[in-house]
Image (cartoon, rainbow, N blue to C red; front, side):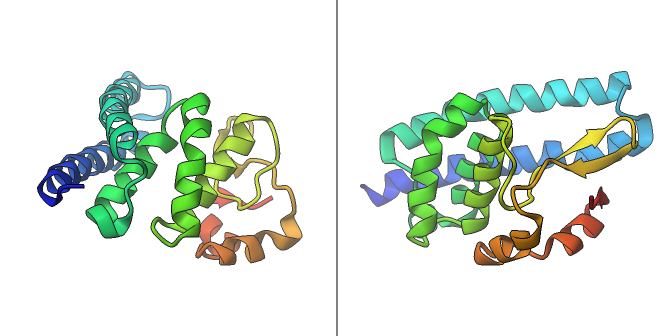
Length: 180
């Protein structure tokens, strides 16, 4: 691969990452200020979905041309853009590209934590319990965020530690998620 070409790809992916982050940083503010059922929150969600669609087209083009680019090839931020964009896609796309992320992460070319998040997402999408405890949802009855079902609560911290994630208790407290 030509270095100058990868510089261009890196720049494109870094912009994808920054735009995604910029939009998603507004979520908590809009939730607190307007509420989940507000027109403002709906508008923000539409903006995020539009941004995600545009980003997905760009990221798929990159992956199809170069494969899952490593942190060494394009830097940590651009590598993270690949993950974030695919993670927010539909389940068919996630399942298609997960093996590429998995191979990259297991080769230490991408983050193991990203692999864990995507693996949990795939399991949840299939209606199965998650392994690492990374996925949660809003429970209307409890008016709180709660974790999706875990495959093994007793070993979740061991699984989390193996991919560089903090203990689930700390994660739960920091993100205000009800811990079972």
